[in-house]
Image 1 (spheres, rainbow, N blue to C red):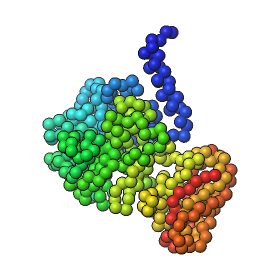
Image 2: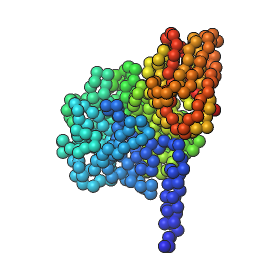
Image 3: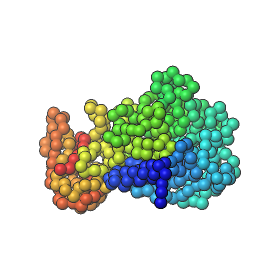
Image 4: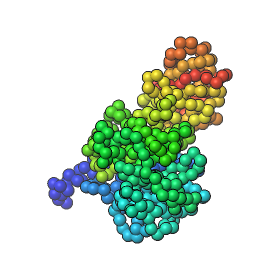
Length: 455
């Protein structure tokens, strides 16, 4: 069969992209490879992660072409199952439509509520008893019609405040928020404009662009008494869900990126187009966001997840963008203790060098690191710690009650407060294993745990 030069190039590029996805065997970012999964919102419902997204149709897209909305689920943030596909024909839109923009979801009163954007115009909602559907449009019209506010009624986000009330936030440049009624399909009030002090964004790095001060895709989450309003990787903080919000910063900087993940970027740089969401799972925080570093096409995006850590002053530290992602680890690289998947009884502490460590460790507290790969040739584990008293670290398979495979003993109190490397022998293991670190000793501050590595 003869291929024209243009057809040959398209085929060649497709093959290269496929091979790239296949060759990176130990990567988890993108979380769902080569599907165009974009604008990720993750909600934890009954112990399971639910990912609501739109998706870009093709690697050959020359503009935003999105035909439907998807809902995925995962128990471990590594393996994802497609639960449901929502087509615009099954909503008030009533026909095929290639402007299926960002979504979000919520669970209340035993029902699932899936909110969706009709391009950058207006937004609706469907309801189901199950995440796998079937979905019903209870209104037969938009929940947020295009004439509702001076902004554009799209890119919705759902927030539950400290009192348990639900709100919807939406818009571009200027954001609006409104409380939802208990039925979750109607507004309890007229939307309020959100006041953001001194905002910045991908189009407004110096604060002088008053026409485009922020971006689209607002999202609000709550942590330790503060509300965080974000637009991509930029964010502001407030004491009240309505604001006012004070612009704080960006969680992506020039040092965030592992090699191969810093380029290509959008026209306005690596901080543009990072639409996403923040969520907590097993006492660990995460940022889910858009990325195009592996496709090179701003119209065919992927979704990444990174660990998120909060500084002592409440600000969010810069995230790390790499291919390993979350919920799995590479034994050929040092592993930061704060990047656990599950924990019991511990706290994260910001340390002077700008990083984080695990503190407030007591007897029987534990940390779980699942899916550690490349372990079959490793015979030693080395833990970087500050020992406050004589104690030990049990290393077990899978869980606190799993098989004991190593015991690292820590000596007397380290009066200098400096880190030391404690090593212990490992038995031969298979290539991939989940490990649990169980701490033993007397007292409430057994040690400060920074990181560990395998040799």
